[in-house]
Amino acid sequence: MSQKQHAPVKDFTPYEPSKGEEYMSREQLDHFRDLLQTWKQQLQEEVERTMSHMRDDANNYADPADRASQEEEFALELRTRDRERKLIRKIDQTLEKIRQDDYGYCEQCGIEIGLRRLEARPTATLCIDCKTLEEIREKQRVA
Image 1 (cartoon, rainbow, N blue to C red):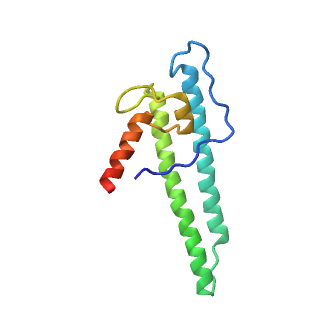
Image 2: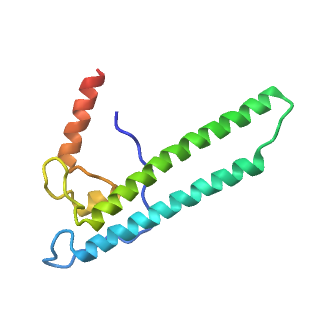
Image 3: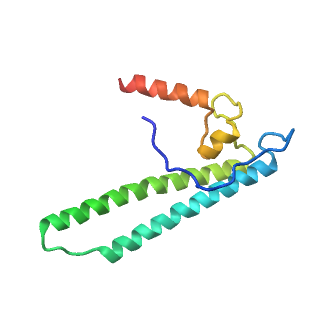
């Protein structure tokens, strides 16, 4: 089953390569590094907001229904933040790939993942064809 990720940074300017520009040029790598760092910062701020909210809003309700409702709300927020912490780790791994000049190419077949796919999912490690095949295999295993 494929894991849903949060949308990356909104309201960014898509990269427009210059004519004849080499794929994963220094400018492109800088663009994706900035995009990933901004996304990571936004996720970290959201984790902080959640922790503050939980500290500030933690009440000891006398009514069991109110207490259960608050506990459910906190549990949902904690699951969301746990997914975000995992995503932050994946962003860190992707930033490391950029530092090693190993970003933007499919881990299975080695072809270019593509600028638009990477802007939609900057942590992508597979080209669209390999990702599609992986999802088909996952569905067959589950069925």
